[in-house]
Structures are given as C-alpha cells and as structure tokens.
Length: 167
Image (tube, rainbow, N blue to C red; front, side, top):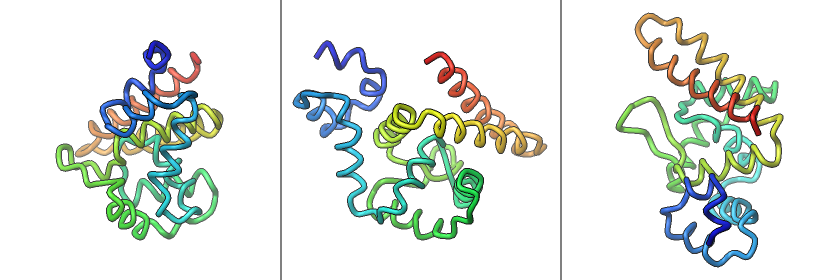
C-alpha cells in the first residue's frame, strides 16, 4: 500500500471501486493503466482509441475542439466526431458537463489514466497535444464575450506543460 501512496495519478484516480480493487490486488501497479484502458474501451472501435488518447489532455471537449485538436495533431481530417461522441455517451465513458456547460467530459478516472499512460509512454505526443490545445485557447481567449473561459483553459495547458518540463 505504501507504493500506491507514491503514485500521484493513482491517488487522483482512486475512489472508483474497480480502481481501488486493482490498486489493492495488482502486483505491478504500473500495469493498471493498460488493464483499465483495455477493459473500459473494449467496445470502442480500435481505430478510435488514439483519438480518445488525444482527447485525454482536454478537460472539456466538443465536436469543434475535438476536430481541431485531432486534425492539427494528425494532419488529416477527423470526420467521425459525432459518432465518437455518441459512442462514448452510449458506453458511459463521457457525458455533457452540466455544471460548467463547456463541453463533454471523459469519465474523470479514465481521463487521468489515459493521460497518465500517454504522458508516460509518449511524452513528446503529450507535450505536443497540450501545446496545440494551449495555442487554440490562447487564440480563443481574444474573444470579448467568452475570452475569460478560454484563458482558464490556456492557463491549465501551460501549467501542464511546465509540470511536464520538470519531470
């Protein structure tokens, strides 16, 4: 149990009964992200998992932000955005955020695990996605009506990038 206390992402994601169980029974806690992702996303078409991985850096997304981030990272058009949102909702993996109304949110525990795995396994991709998100939000922050909201999101991504530089 002492080992679990030293794993920042696991402490953030605990509270979900299944993750608590895995944390208590898994011999190698570093394997938990793969297990969770394999089970949680088993009904999602395999070609969409990289898209979900990319979305894991966003606190909120909608079809526009999803498409901009994925298109800018892959340099090819992503057209399955409506289908993906519908599938994520049907599987209970994402929902519209009623509290802030800024977009859809991935299940928080899964989002933490996806982003952790991305950061651990593909740090350059993790940084590039946060950098691109920051650029979008910085640009949108110029909007006189909604700028404050997007400033917060840009700040979040800048902080993530600074945090990543320390690792």
